[in-house]
Image 1 (cartoon, rainbow, N blue to C red):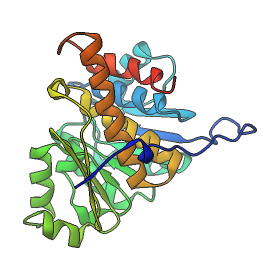
Image 2 (image 1 turned 90 degrees about the horizontal axis):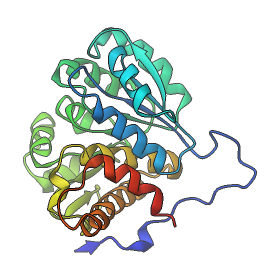
Image 3 (image 1 turned 180 degrees about the vertical axis):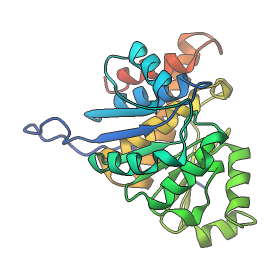
Image 4 (image 1 turned 60 degrees about the vertical axis):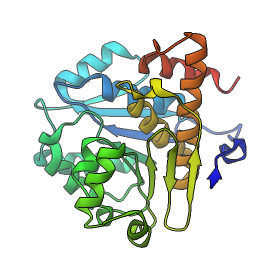
Length: 266
């Protein structure tokens, strides 16, 4: 088995003469009237990864709620309570300004048609999470990072008409999968890596949104899906381990995790 080590955690050096936007811009397509927190957690985690700019595009009521949660995120609103196929052209136009796009956090299955069509037509590096995973297949994209838990992984394989992991590798193209679990698996066409950071407290709602946000942020900076996936899995678990000790148990929350990210570089 190949396990992740600190050697896998290298970000590009920042140019001291860089200007706003040169160190990564991320677009997060997320949220619905039921799930506001997912979009906010993903957006803040992406920003904490070190990128210069994160925009969350969300249903309008969700967007206003996110404005109240964070003054650092740029928020654009679409009409309605859910993403619909009628929003596709708007999203494709918006993505042109970003280095990586995260889609899926809290969008619900009501946005399945939009997610599938967007993923097929997008020309940007993608991180695909949650309900967007359930709406698509491996063959709908290339150079994407998928972040499923076990059940979402099974749905992804079914959608892709793939029976098992061996067959998956033959059809994965240049996509990367972070399969979340007790030991995370980072799966590529050529090899699989394992990540041992993390603990049972990571089963709490929102921790997956943090992982997806980190993956998008690191992808925007490195332009390398495997490198970004390795860093996201390792740091997401490490943050959980730090909080487990700090809180002396499993009382930590996903919102604690996004606050803890800022201390990792110290």
